[in-house]
Image 1: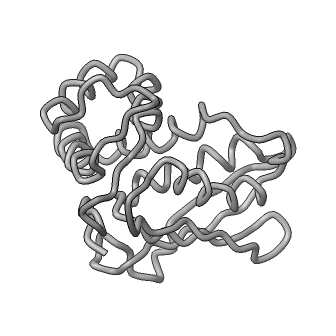
Image 2: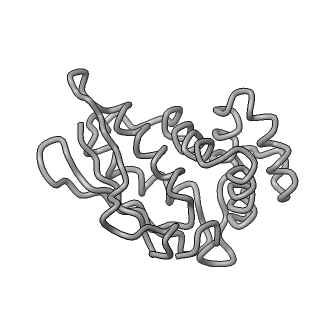
Length: 179
């Protein structure tokens, strides 16, 4: 799947997701709002929806302007500040729920997935097949693991370099998770 390229023309992203990113970026939030406006995303409010392609174009520009690190921070921000149901009380449940949240904040067609599977006690694999950049996915996964890991854990999340990723032309990226 192509990076920064919507899978279907009618896909939209919720204003709530956009707003969460802008608010979570601190001093960079004002610059992000300018970039979003350049792509037609103005005044993102929770009840509004915006073309995912415009959102992805803004992501591409942010990556070009300030680097991949900011994309990881955006992913981190979304899930660090998200409200979670009370029943989500473990890393496993939280990682499995990322796909649900992703689908609630997008509509209008095929958007891909975040698929988690456990590979042992306190470890698993997350496969991300979506149009977002790998740095963004890494931020999402790291934020979730850190938030839900038990106090005695040392969370680690890294890309499985033995498999090609979306930035290599593959359809998905694979991440390994331990805590």
